[in-house]
Image (tube, rainbow, N blue to C red):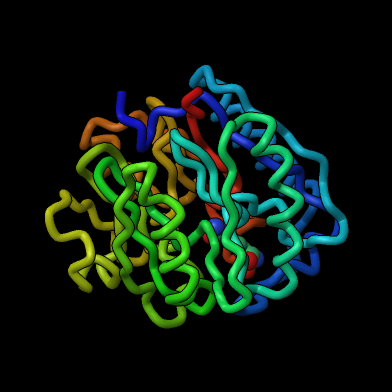
Amino acid sequence: MSASYHFTHAITRKPSASITSGLRAVDIGTPDLAKMQAHHADYIAALRSTGAEVVELDALEAFPDSVFVEDTALCLPEGAVVMRPGAPSRLGEAALMAPHLRALYAQVRQISGADSFIEGGDILTTETEILVGRSARTNAAGIVELTALVSDWGHTVREVFTPPGVLHFKTDCSLLDGETILATERLAASGCFDGYKVIHTAIGEEACANTIRFNDLVIMPAGFPKTRDTLVAAGYAVREVGNSECAKLDGGMSCLSLRFSPRG
Ligand code: CIR
């Protein structure tokens, strides 16, 4: 079993009505809550269709971006690490995720340094290492602290860089299997995936780089036919899910869940 993409559990959180005030790099319109809820339900159905247990947490009105649960924690087989989001409006979300992780994990650790910032969207866990992209949300101190917290669990952290103007490292890449990454050309050109097989998103379809491999499925945003066809031709079982509303807030498939198989 490949621990980097075989999962027994996922945690999600319902979108709140306050999602209309969610953070966005560029305002391309207000998300439609009903449409987002429909997409979210479809996403959860896709996760469940693989046999995983999916927790659906209640919406948090005080945190407009709280549907993007991935940013609050890093989940590994041995335990979970609660993040310290670099976006001030999101800092409180992480503490609210901790009890849900403790319910499923024996070991839950925490990024706690006052100067340490790190968001789950900047973390790509592969079969052999954990890549963390420095970004406007994740700093060197956060990466150093994470490295120390996961080393006795046997994990190696490698610092990489999120391209300027890109929200998170995983905005531009995803794990497809134990040796293959889907990435935009602009990110892959940095050399951070040397040693991996890389499939590029089609030109003009960079916005679908944030997909997830979840058990047998590659779950990707709908509306990117060239990249979808490339993935299907490469042998992946692709499931498309609408993402138009989350995309208005720079969110994609990985942001909407924490995915893991707690060991013991
Ligand atoms: C934010 O700016 O924090 C949210 N609007 C989007 C977060 C997306 N999360 C992710 O890529 N992991």
